Length: 266
Image (tube, rainbow, N blue to C red):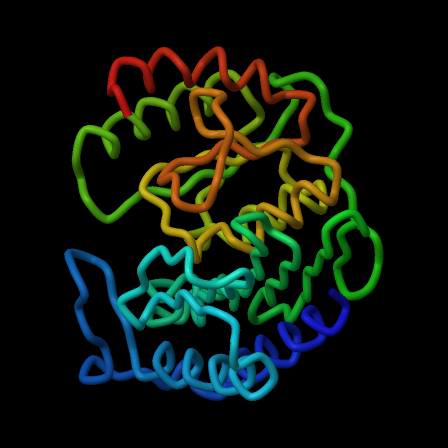
């Protein structure tokens, strides 16, 4: 597993270098619109290619799911790498300093390695299953806050302004009222790592993709946190909504979230 992590770190650093070199250099002509308010750039494509080249040179028999390559769920491979070469592209194109490279490795559909590089801080979050979570090689843990009213939360919003988007607006208002605040950074992999290192106490979001969570969920779990779907059921990366927390405030958060989830039937 350490060899897998070393490869993930090398690949993520290469992609991070590509993003850093092009930060504040993106022109309107460089931006491709994938859907309403969802963008991609040549940086996403170059970073993804760099990651895949490194992985395939070392593990040619492993599967890869990558955001910019029309990914599909595949049971063909025991080991699958799930890649987001630039999580937070909207932030990136606006020169807003919160984006990341995320690489997770799953074995038989279970996360075993995770690596997220937060940019531009260059914090490197890593985890190997059953070996703990780290930031810049220092052990990290979720917070010990057990009072929802004293907690700080983070969330994100999907691109489609549908009933789930409206429901999340209501949850944003609710949790802003019953906690010490809710933040929205715009990069789910970073949000998960901030739960893992204890600077926020919980995170929820609708309309996520496998590459958004594949690395971060392991980092949270190895830091002592808890991950479920937003109704409390078990989570995997092909579920499109998530609740991550320090564990202590998980049930109090579920009490507020579950009635809304039940009303949406999702």
